[in-house]
Length: 325
Ligand SMILES: Cc1cc2nc3c(=O)[nH]c(=O)nc-3n(C[C@H](O)[C@H](O)[C@H](O)COP(=O)(O)O)c2cc1C
Image 1 (cartoon, rainbow, N blue to C red):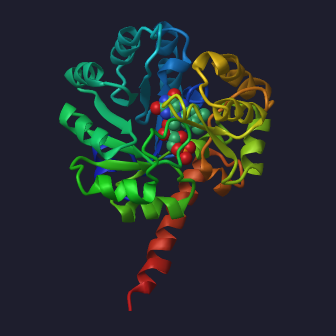
Image 2: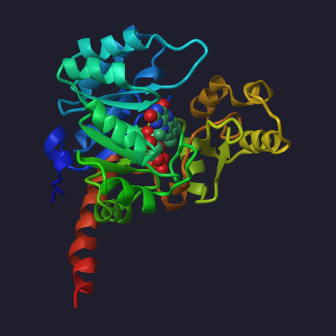
């Protein structure tokens, strides 16, 4: 069984299931496993220390799958930004045909990718940003609700509203992101007007995900209340797994008047990386969404994707159809 949508047609994949960019997690083995399973996997460009390392990582993914996979390029405001143009060139030169952009002002990146025949999915958290990306000429939108891991934006609109609100206005294919972890989420997303789903946290907790087993077990043990929103007061909200460090950050922000300097050491990316590598979930900040409450196992990507598609069919055929009197 395959669920066919405008998204699967456009991107040449079997199933409308995407693994979005994930810093420190989106490496070749995970992206390739998702694509091998019939979904669309993404390598995260900035996880690689240099554009040259990204070229090697793309080659590694090519050696693991012949199916389409993409690269995520996340554009974040930074005092010393990474060499975006060089990362972009590495993606183009490597012959990758699909890119997920996320973050601020992607126009120059979109223009350059499109000039090389690359399809671009722009991920955003607001209808107005989706419409502006559509005007920029991207091929598809990934719309990320407030439930999501990572950056949910500042509008706090959950998927149940955001997806149909975007579907009412966006004309190009759109996939739903944030809070999706099983077939029920997939079918709901389709019902709300999306043509596929993007998942982060769920794919992070799979056999092929290149993070420590203890972090995967922590995700299984966690529930839907196990996240914190940090950087709220800095207007750069991030949803992360609730732990000793995230609670300290929230406490510092709660006191009022906090600046980035006050939390800088606690939130250092290097500490988050140690969480994934050494498996101590309380060592630093790491991203995870509310969907942790729906994650109860650590399947392979193949098992996960085929289970979602099989159960989605069951829900549509055996549950939904029966409601029609
Ligand atoms: C560990 C982790 C790291 C992430 N890093 C990025 C990133 O670097 N760039 C990006 O665009 N999205 C990033 N995301 C967001 C995901 O691509 C996706 O939009 C989000 O996880 C969807 O919500 P969900 O976790 O509820 O499925 C990250 C998510 C996780 C769980």
